[in-house]
Image (cartoon, rainbow, N blue to C red; front, side, top):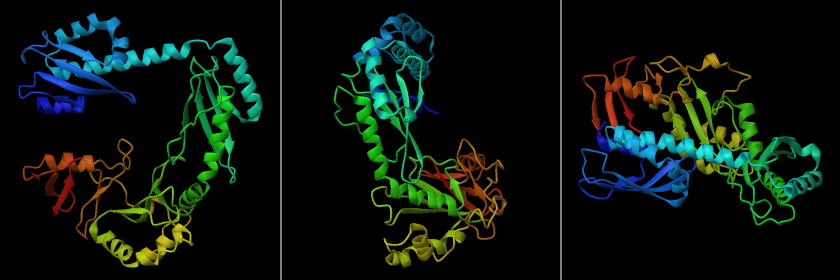
Length: 372
């Protein structure tokens, strides 16, 4: 891997500003936040003359440790290795800073306010509260008796500062301006209204989970808008739902060797005009594909040959096989990463742009894989 590739792998948003790469300017990602970072050096052979500048938010966290950072600069062989260490250190410091912030006790009047709000919401809706009372989990049930949970993080400035919320919903959960009198109660009320909005979407997803062989996700969450449905041995359909128009035509991707999925793809394009928004989505998909989806009631997992032909496992780093040999007599599936490593090890391997060409490990017929 070249120096540029190493730097890009660590900080893809850090861009050289000159031909000699003496100055880099851009951003560094730490958890879910992005911070401005600028690096300047006088020569490329040494890091001793390097200077760093960053956004004031990141500087407030790092400045007590500037001597340690400078010492790390002198130890590293190149800029890429320093950025790896710098990012790891920064992540730890940001995490510690967040933990320290969360460990602070809330003002006494905030506890009183929160108790009043929870009583108004109903104690039966409370699932969890931590010792400091700054993390609260509340539950709600929809019309189908499905349980939904919202986690609310109370900040020190509450109620003047809105809490931070995390939810399992298919779309972002936006908190509107809440009253300073009862923000948690307002948030919970909004959460319940939003749950009602997604009833039809969850009904469809539950129907797919119940009546089809779902390969991915293995443990679906309420936020997941896709399902990978088995069509047969070595063939599957990835369906991505439109949350705003659940009964409409979903985004479809067929996975497997062309010899197995060509007919499904052809039927989809030919019969798409027969899609009827008044019908259930499974009925529509079976009508346009001219097939009956396998179900857990009619078939067993062993009936699907879904293991990778190289590592012989189904899941690898939570990914299932998605590349296949297109020869009709083979059709073996592989993890894309396994196939990539296999082909790169062949002397006959060649690459054109982002596609690698080689031979199938099973039948020696031509096979390709895209480099991600």
